[in-house]
Amino acid sequence: MKLLITNDDGVFAPGIIELASALSARGHECAVTAPDRERSSVGHSITLTRPLRLWEAPPGPYPPECTVYACDGTPSDCVVLGIEEIMPDPCLVVSGINRGPNLGDDLTYSGTVSAAMEGVILGRSSLALSLNCGEDDGEHHYETASSVAASMVDFLEANPLKPGVLLNINVPNVPLSLLRGVRVTRKGVRLYEGKVTRFTDPGGRVYYWVAGRPEDQLEEGSDVWAAANGYVSITPVHMDMTHFPSIEELTADGAEKINFK
Ligand code: MN
Image 1 (spheres, rainbow, N blue to C red):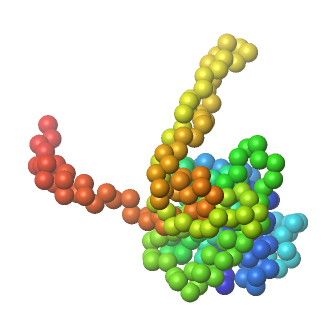
Image 2: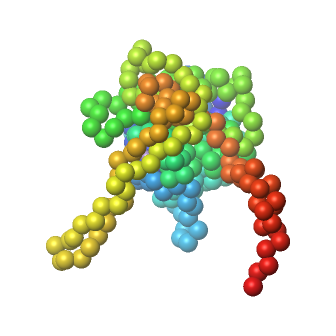
Image 3: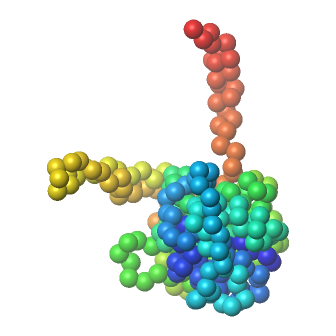
């Protein structure tokens, strides 16, 4: 299959190299178009206010049969340019393997997932893959996630996704033999405790870090629950964010009859 591969950790991050290498080794035609630097948590932003550059990257650690381009834009820019300029007819857009999970409300912040969203918007089936590793984990089992990716590509060839749907896949950071299995999940709830930290710089001016410790609501069937229990989590994500029950409710409550003063 023809696969357009991108990420938000940068074109030479270990996750995307492992992903492209594993998919290429299984006979897929892989074109990588990825940011030239880390673009984690840029969400779905695209670049409209400056020119974009796209250049063939030295293959370096990639297998020689992979086409590799770097771009100075965002992950979504990479998907747009990848389809326009590098691989016009990919069967799938594959984004990842992200260093760290994309669970619950990470979805809208994630450049990894947003790249898959861009693929869906452009009419392509898309996958986002993330390795559920922590900052302090000594080992990163990207090879587990790339095996999951390869199996999912085969699965989707036989079982195509509906238009407008992408799969957000989170893989436990363990050797393949220790995976507990797979759960098809819904988006869970992940809140960040202590999101804003306030500091003072040596000049006496206040500055902030927006970060925080994730607090998951571990309801069975959610992505955060599956991840906490050692499963591969596969969440089908629909690009239509409309909350349909509220259409009726708002209409019944008279929202269309509000008199604007
Ligand atoms: Mn990232």
